[in-house]
Length: 464
Image (cartoon, rainbow, N blue to C red; front, side, top):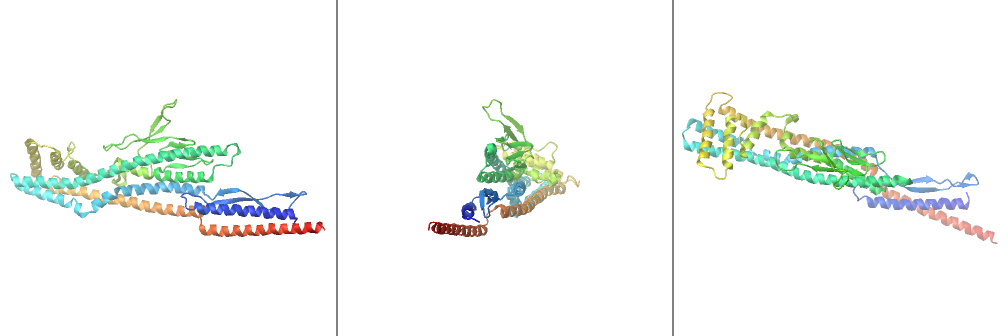
């Protein structure tokens, strides 16, 4: 090994150690940045030749650094985030209604039983004015109790629709930023470029994770590193282009919010094109919000099938809201709807009161029926059955989504831990690396110093 080889080895080691210390400092600083991916040095052995023979101790060169990153783990994290967010959104959205139903003071059991006690009194004394007033009063108490649940359901819908609007805006912002990053990736890879900056790739991955949590579905990375996001089979992000997700129906009517995707922008040569999305096209947070915003009762149907036991509860809440009875409704629901409509009137007339009293008296007359299907016992059982089906299905729905969220979150936690162990910054490891690079730097400095001393001594000898 000659002096030049020694100097080359020491210098390359010095440069390698300096690059390593700089990179370690970058990793330590990046540890506090959300989405940061640990960097590692890319080192190659230098192929320095001397007289046709490789020199011993030729050293190494630093070709830059790369990200410690797993595409498989990243894709699994993105997918799992959508599942966790969907179930969590539905469970959280129904939580207030579930707490309301679990409050014994808000139970419909007593109002229903008190109503039928008053009904039995009027049935025994059909001409007793006091009994008629008492039945009207107890009917009002029952409708007030049912109205609280109608208000609770309306609040769930209203909150979900407001949150859905915010989520759509967030997703559109993410889509626009991903499209810009995709264009940067293509530009950086062209003409022999070194590729996109690691910080931009970190940002791309963080945005995809956010999009997965918001909308789930089909999203990930192409072979060239560009991100893609499909919603309901439609490309929200495709290369350097981003479409726009829109809510085309947003009010508090019985209609579900409709979503569409708009391609193109106003003012261009080609007019924008909108494509409607299916109501079940979204997963993630937005899928849960859309489900609740459409109709919370859909969540209360076991296995997605209509539950006939809920019918009396939905009819009771409609009556409380002052809506007329459905065609072919039972005498019980007809009377309660008449009472609800009467209560909703700003200035009821004597004729309105007479019509209501006739409806209640007709109901009392039927209560005396010995028919097991039409008598007071059957009517009372139907109302209580609807209430209990409502409470039971609500509790089951909340528990089901909570359990699914917990199971999915456990998988997500494990995936995040695996990803973090490979791609995250370990301060203990970085401290060890820093010590190693410092020792390497000090050793290389001493080797250069020794080589310089040797050269000085050689020159002194030659100069004599």
